Length: 168
Image (cartoon, rainbow, N blue to C red; front, side, top):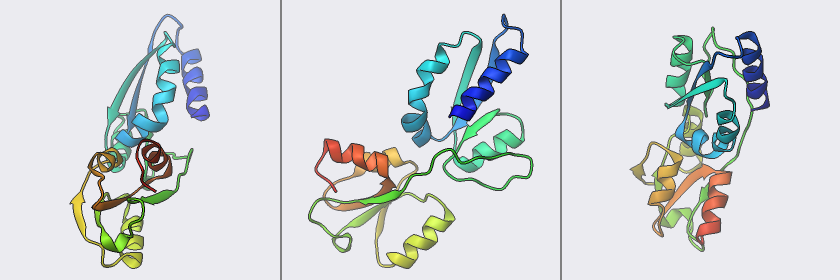
């Protein structure tokens, strides 16, 4: 995020201060609602900046940047694109969120595929788990969570959920 703010300041210095710079940002819903939301208020205070924020899947963001339809992207998975420069700015552990006192063997999974590596790891370590519900975002996982399911979710979202309910 600091690199991004520095990039924004550099872009503003290049342009005439009376003109506004249009910055097209692509991000996943998870990143927008958790990581970037804290920065939006600061960015909106910059009178020289128009923000255009779009939600896409990680692979779509890479494609849109390569086609120059986005200027900057925040993704959960990095894909190799020869004309795109990437940098990891944050890494977070995935944790298993399940009802207190229950085991995975007693539950069905609310499944979200984070990456092909995740799928391979999960199948190796939990081969007999039923994936009864498949969802498109981590936020959907939390809405569907109940006493008959478990999910794998980023640690900060799990902690937020635990604070509101009694899951561990």
